[in-house]
Image: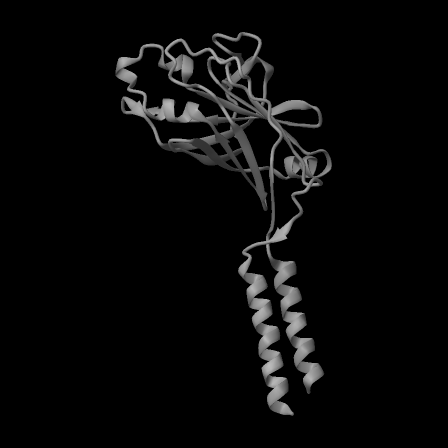
Length: 232
């Protein structure tokens, strides 16, 4: 009887672990340009990037002083606003920048928006725009005539970061699993570039989510122990 209880408990716990979604999370190595063009000394620095792949969902958070500056802009008083607005997030697999995530509606109703829609596109080289001040740095992507989105998502802005959530097509997920994912982002001026490489083979080992599964499994084992003691 006791062996049967333990066997059932371990079986249920194993099923929960195997059925749980895989979450990959790790810091990304980044290259932040220290020579930021900042004529008004307002702060356009970018400090880092973090990446998570949960199932088919890509979650990227970019941190830095720039977002505090951007979130406090009054568009009506700053004619140069488009120059300093957020650019697109470029994604690379198989050795090329083949994808771009655009942030729609970063300015809405005459003010800096706090959230909006994000769109994933396959990159057409004709749609790549380069920095308005650093003209060799790719900065944002313009969809070409008739080009449709591959996947849709959302973005959100706070005083310290910009976060984007977007689904990835199966072919991208397969490539990431084999070769990792390159990421590049800057504002439309082309300054304070942050670039990184995400790899599921790195220290970001897949773990079951939520972590409460572990607690639940421990509880099952404890319950089995109580039943065993009572049966003696």
